[in-house]
Length: 349
Ligand SMILES: Nc1nc2c(ncn2[C@@H]2O[C@H](COP(=O)(O)OP(=O)(O)OP(=O)(O)O)[C@@H](O)[C@H]2O)c(=O)[nH]1
Ligand SMILES: [Mg+2]
Image (cartoon, rainbow, N blue to C red; front, side, top):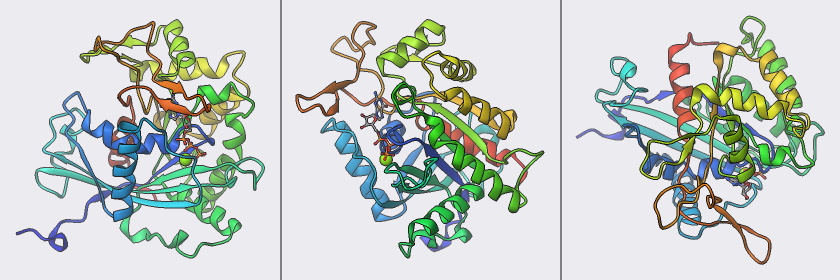
């Protein structure tokens, strides 16, 4: 019998999640289990909590979204989560190259550790009442002591930054819906970016004068009518090859869509986010995705209808609720892409 102690140590990458308040970070994480279960294209991943808190997060949020049609609440405090992704011998395109490289014969494993963090720590003006969720995949030796002692805000800020600076990959959520409102994504981008660059330099991790991180830029809330219509008008929303024919923006068009969103007249300071990504990250290490944690509404016809696809409804008390089934789009994929990039790159200090 194989005991936990005799299991080979899973391969670990370090990944951080970054995004403005209300950009959908917690919902993105909450949709992971449903994304895993509804994998198409030959993917065969499973996800399981490595701690009881992580298991509880998955089961609670899956039920919250799927059964009760409710979005997770805005993040308060710090929540630490640890998940294990496991795939059997790889049939999909992501896995073929891994077969001979995994230290777990017949399966691929990676572990993910998450911190969902509240507060204005990453706002351009510290101490605002905003929050940032962080997702991290730590090397075991990194330890997770950073949040154990409930440090004061400055310490938390430093430790979160330290953690981001040590990450190999980042998932950045760009919310075009929020970007149209009064708060700009750049307000929650520039300070962290500057500090991240400074810390990475001190750690000797800059590469060719750029940040060393692989960056998955995810345009979120694709299901939102304003976002979908923009994608449609740009000609990047193609009919999916699934049974419901749900629209998808293929990876090779997602960057073009992001650039278009950032250069729109109503894009606020998003152009600065785009410019900063080009300036601070190597283009070879940036990938783009157009995502939705909840997906499009698909009614009784079982097929996407252009006249009735909004999957969010508002209750009489003004609360946003999920209208139909949760069908995540490009939620798992950014992590798999990052994992592949990290595995293929030369390890950093
Ligand atoms: N249409 C649509 N709305 C979404 C989606 N994901 C999240 N939302 C909306 O965005 C709101 C904020 O989502 P959260 O996941 O709480 O965002 P967050 O980034 O974790 O927010 P903080 O914890 O406050 O930083 C939700 O309450 C929903 O109204 C999505 O996939 N589609
Ligand atoms: Mg949150």
